[in-house]
Image (cartoon, rainbow, N blue to C red; front, top):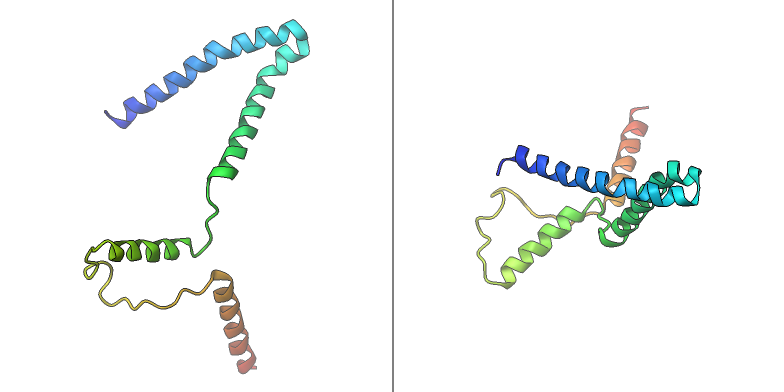
Length: 121
């Protein structure tokens, strides 16, 4: 299935849901007041957006600057533990050094820069 066709299907489903549910929401809100009839869809959409944000905050892990390095080390260890040959994995000239947290790395670079500037005066 082409990407174009899949995209059209996804938007068609969204359009169907919107066209089917929003008039019903507006009718239910109109029974209460005219103001709710005009703003009810906004409030429903806002509530769904807040719900989606809460689900995202709870379920998506917080990754730091060194996340990729840590995941690669865990993956290499997993492969070793399960008997995979990783001798051909990665760059031949690569020498693995201990990971330095991003905050310490930035502080070290800042100190080196100030030492160089101080020496030039």
